[in-house]
Image (tube, rainbow, N blue to C red; front, side, top):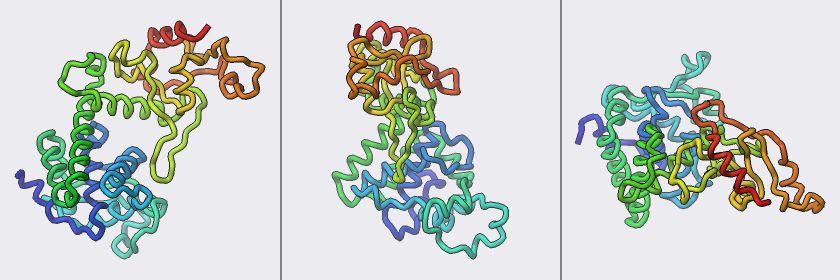
Length: 309
C-alpha cells in the first residue's frame, strides 16, 4: 500500500458511514476532473455524490447528515497534516476551534464553503490506480460488514471511476461501443456532463429544483437516440424534466435548429389537458453557457424532422 493512503485506515468514525462516504465522494470528484487542486469546494455535485453513497450503504438517504463529516474530518490526520482543513470565513478563523458542532448544512456553510485536502493525499488520489486502491480500502475497512452491500458499492465505484475517464475525455463518448461493457460508465458520464452543462435546469420549462437530500428534478435526454448513433456527447443531450423528456421521446415536442421548441400538430390545442405542452410552442431553448456543450445542429434537425406531423 502507498504510504500516503495509510491514514485512511485510522479515521475516527462515530457514525460508520459519514467520513468514508464523504471521502469516497471526494475521490470520485477528483477522478472525474471536478476537483483539480487540493482545495475542495462544497457544492451540490459533491453533496449529491455523498448522499448517493450514503443511501447505497445504509438504505436511508434521509438520515444522511453531510455537515457532520465536513466538520469532523478536520480532526483526522493525513500524511502531511490534517486530512481536511476548512477555509473559515475571516471573522470566524480566530475562534474556529471554539465553535460547536454545526447543526445543519446552512450553519456549516456560514463557517466555510471550501476546505483543503492534505497535499500528499491529494497527489496520491489523482493517480487512478491509487484512487481505486483508496476506494477499496475505505469500502472494505468501514463499509464492508454486509457482503451484498459491499458488492453493490464496489460495482457503483467501478462505474463512477470509469465514468470519470469519459468525463475528462468527452470526445470518447462519440466513439460508440468499443470496450467490453462500458455502457453504465458512458451513461453516468453523459448524465453528469449534461446536467452540469445546464446547471440542473430544464432546457424547456426552465425549472430547476434540488431536493434537501440532493436529488435533481431534471434528467439527461438524448437528442438523437443512443440506439441510432451511440453518441453520448453532451452536445447530443438536453436536461429535461421527466414529463418533457417523455414528450420529446414520443415526438410530441422537439427543439429545432432555430433554438426554439416546436409542438407536434398531433397535440390538440383545444384540449385543456394539453396546455402544458402547447405552452412550449415557439418558446426559446435554454442553452448551456459553455458553447462546447450546446446542442449540435444536426441533432436538433433530427429531432425536428421526427416530430409527429
